[in-house]
Length: 178
Ligand code: IMP
Ligand code: MG
Image (cartoon, rainbow, N blue to C red):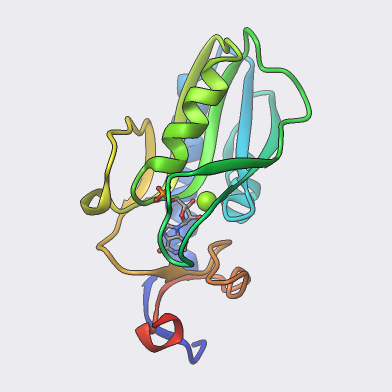
């Protein structure tokens, strides 16, 4: 195990099984629809690339990158789009794919922004959720796991741009970021 990680929360095998289930549910729900997955860079990139291989209907992918100003392990709620979608989403069924929802401020902003582009539908799929930390209500349509209020890394999720390559999700030792 990586030395900066205190504990593994979800192993590779556990992640694989959950991502497969999510893909199957999405396949069922969108069976007669054309779907656009919008991955939120960079954290959701690993999750999204595994997820699409379990979605058995035609699907397109696009990416958006946002930055949240503020402290390194806390979202400020002030969000800026650094890279916008390549294509329009008007009249499309859109599913946002996110790595982790914490306060909800980032996704709240993102949903408002994407809704203004008039998609036919907009839903949310997140691998991880920290419901205790929520500052604004977010309706999550597809969720991998709820997690406690701990700072996690791995499977695409970073601390200061590192640890994204860990194949599992683990809790980062506090001494690393405090
Ligand atoms: P929110 O706006 O507070 O919901 O924060 C959302 C973003 O903060 C996520 O998409 C992550 O990029 C980041 N984030 C929140 N919690 C964690 C964590 O435990 N580890 C790494 N990044 C996190
Ligand atoms: Mg993210």
